[in-house]
Image (cartoon, rainbow, N blue to C red; front, side, top):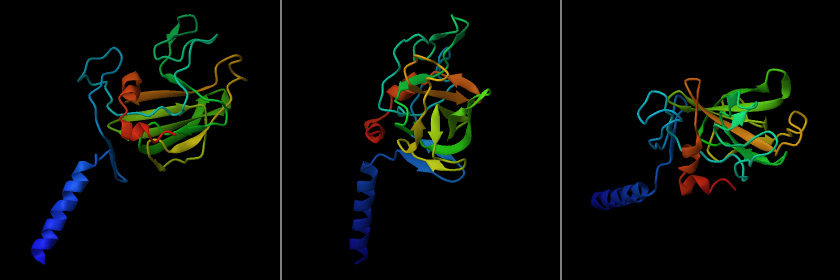
Length: 198
């Protein structure tokens, strides 16, 4: 009987080992499946890197250039005075917005100091890294644990602030308050996670 029980335990462990452990989460910390990635202007292994797989928050692609510029990271803004520090994912107002990563909601704020209507959701994903999702009407609260692909709110309307702009959700990746280029993190999302964004 004991031998049979041990054999069944070994069989169960083998089955579990065959399933990729994507996320382990505790109340105190968040650990994501890691991939070595470098931020823009940084070399791999530098202090200013953040490693995580990220899911697009919407089903739309990156915003193509319009009168307000491109939605790509590093795109010119204000006639070259500054660079775009995130990625813009196309989404019509009212469409669901999903968490790009598993983590803990650490802030619900406003996208601009002069406009309380446009909101952002900050998700802490560990190691000093946070993902910020802008232009979302949140349905989550500070302290909530969210999983990658989980709906965190709906896309907001940007026409009032940016007439003629392609409606979108803006995403930034920060480590220790430094904005990083999240392009590779989004491109590296494994199939197991990407399939949840429906």
